[in-house]
Length: 89
Image (tube, rainbow, N blue to C red; front, side, top):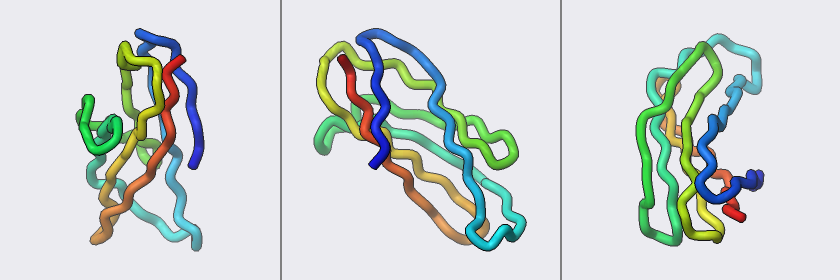
């Protein structure tokens, strides 16, 4: 799992570039994000989609600990999930 580091109170974009393993054409239909601490959703929202890039705008929570940034997106008839470890220092 990829790790990203935020300072307390920091706000920034986290972007994912999506590509097809076989280079076939595709369209990202929708994407949402959730910031989880354990099983509790701390925040979330809709993502911006620019061609094959999914863009989230995340504000680091006040608590210095690890979170999971979960991005759920739809391509064609599939629903896919990416998870990143977000560490607030």
